[in-house]
Amino acid sequence: MIELLVKVGNKRKWYTASWLEGGTVRMIDQRLLPFKFKVVSLRKHYETAEAIKNMTIRGAGSIGAAAAFACAQAVLECKSKEWPKKALQSFDRIANTRPTARDLFFAIERIRNVVEGKQLREAKKAALEEAQKIGKEYQENGKRIGELGSKLIKSGFRILTHCNAGWLALHDWGSALAPIYFAKRLHRKVFVFVDETRPRLQGAKLTAWELANENIEHAIIADNSAGFYMQNQSIDMCIVGADRIASNGDVANKIGTYEKAVLAKENGIAFYVAAPLSTFDFDCKSGRRIPIEERSEQEVLYVSGYEKGLRKVRIAPKKSKAKNPAFDVTPAKYIKALITEHGIIKPKKSAIKKLAKKCKKVPK
Ligand code: MRU
Image (cartoon, rainbow, N blue to C red; front, side, top):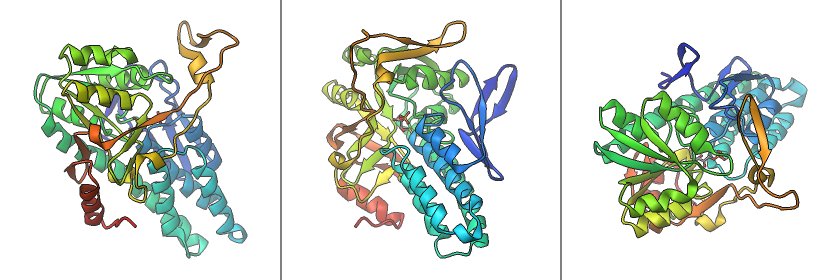
């Protein structure tokens, strides 16, 4: 069941961030939100791969689901004499879109595993079924994270979040925002501080849009004001999502997460990370080994917004250059707990190993 509701014009409709209809992937173009709601149709796997790369769709879980759909498209596109070589090349193309989100590789591995060794006809069927299954799992996992995480939220809580880890980012429900949505459904009063999240402004544009749709009270704050509110005791807890979690509990998430976690520790505020198992990289021993995506300097030198239409304006001197790492790593010692669909655990090697075993993914 698709859980979250979007108000588009006067109509209210249920949506996931992307979905697969036959061989066509449809997705909400997140680059246009909150100003324009548009669904794009992608008929070939390379179009879906490009949509992941250019951030039409983004957020670890949504990247995972879209990658699964793209892989299914790649198998469907194959002719008998090209199978399986061409499909494997296409999987590589999909894998080369974004380096940090573990879910991308998780989804590709899942599709590769179900098609391996099969005749093309069976492989097509298996790839389609597995891709739909992966999408469904994100929905269920997000909901479960919401259920479990909501237990940490008391009525009246003021919660800080960074970037967008809502239903746009996890296919449905979300990771960091799911507990908040669940708490709201349990009639708990919550207020959300939304970090604007430079340079792409996923907080100001996407998280705020989701929260407004859900009638959740919130305020967008400049990225550098979180410390002010923490010091003033205006924040009760922090919840963020994750792009990759190492087996020692270190977490890669949107750039700026690390400094919020350090500030939270300094001010005695609990800092939680919410993510499904698909975001854990059990073979990655420490956060230092997580590949960090470096994106175009254009994202820092320009801002895009809406003023009589969508506009992009330069905000820095013409001769200035910029640097743009898209993620940072928060060491486990700053994280109170990890909220997963299998329970809330300590960000410790032993707890993650136990979790992996329970889910039959034993780390090497
Ligand atoms: O660059 P993005 O927008 O894909 O980054 C998204 C984030 O960092 C989210 O916080 C993260 O994916 C967790 S939500 C599933």
